[in-house]
Length: 350
Image (cartoon, rainbow, N blue to C red):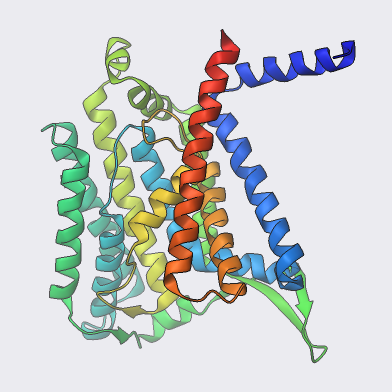
């Protein structure tokens, strides 16, 4: 190895050892997404080159982005919340019934969504943080309760006809300069739903909260080592409680965004969303052991998951099990990569 190669290797080793686990995994997530989307463009045709294709991924997955952010915060804090899919379904059905059967307003529906999310966050946070019950057990009960309540609120699926809500749900924001010309030579504007704006604002807000606020640093500290955090004067119980409250509120917001996207109420809505949110968080660099994660990474984790699903569908493998198998393989790969890289980083630091 010549002198230049040694210097480059030394610089890389210094950067590798000095980079935090969160930033390292975030970098890998972004690189993997770029490679994955580039592969989709190369092998699946020019459809993926159109900006609207990418914007459609955002339109379809904005509720998942919001849900996954909340789950990432709980996971960074060393916990888990598998009730979020049930909360999204309950919010969607409750808002639908309120608007169509009780002649409600959009403002009232938003209040219901936030209220349901906050209630789940407060109850589950209290049971986990102050009574010391395992978060998996608490949120498993929450998931069953939410799914059961969804059926009690209304048993049948139906489309919402409330005019005020339909006007809001059908509103699209035009992105200048990203439109495309169709086969008839007509220019089609690139559009996104309101939910995408909500999701992006929340990604930026929680990125700033986790990076620069005292509460954000507390989440990382408690997730990394709760005993050390306690010795540093951090209120561990309150921090765990707040992580579940935030996750619950975000699930409520995600529920309303999901409701705007589908425009209906159904007991089967958001089926499996909690698993997709966990998978997106892990792919995005959030570690199940706690103390490592980033909302930006979670955002790219959702995009990576959605891109894989689109590639599988574009390849003609429409059966549900192919998507499940692909996601499982991708998840296992990222878990292995995480473990290997963290081990290599520890070795490089010695």
